[in-house]
Each structure stands twice: as structure tokens, then as C-alpha cells.
Image (cartoon, rainbow, N blue to C red; front, side):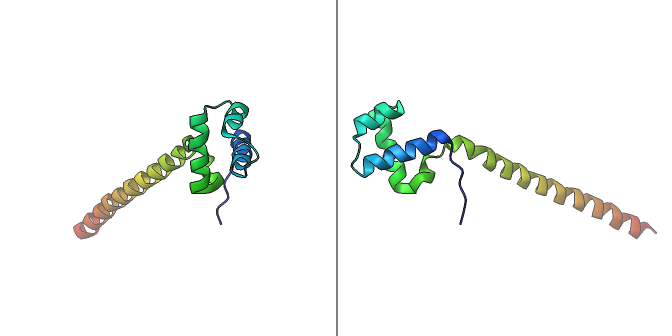
Length: 97
């Protein structure tokens, strides 16, 4: 099970949008409550229905994690190249003796 952290704003959005889905609040009132357009509320409801509350989490917080993973992968490639060079030097040194 994966834990996901939501900001206070995202949590508020989830609660208001859940209220819309349950029929307790109109999309127009939800838009006014959240300070969003009606169109944005429709888009967020679709995300909530498709992905659950995790769909409301800002993707801007996910991008740095992807960049970090790419950076780590690049470091692994560099480390492998470095080891190949060192092993080549060692092999040449042993062969020379």
C-alpha cells in the first residue's frame, strides 16, 4: 500500500468534490467555494472519479521525484563507466608485470 501526502488545499478540494458526487452540493456552488471555474470543477471531478483522491494531487510535486530518479540512473551509468576504466587500467597494469 502506497502512502500519499495531500496538501490542505487538495484535501479541501477532495471533500468539496466528494460532496458534489454525493449530491449534497452543486457544481456551481462547489466552484464558488473553491474559487474555481465550473469547467475546472468538472475536470477535477473526472480526475477524482478516475484516480480517486490521488488524482487531485498536483503533478508539480511528482516531477521532481521523476527528475531525481533520472539523475540517479545517470549516476549509475557514470559509475559503471568509471569502473570499466579502472578495471581496464588494472588489467593493463597486471598484464605489464
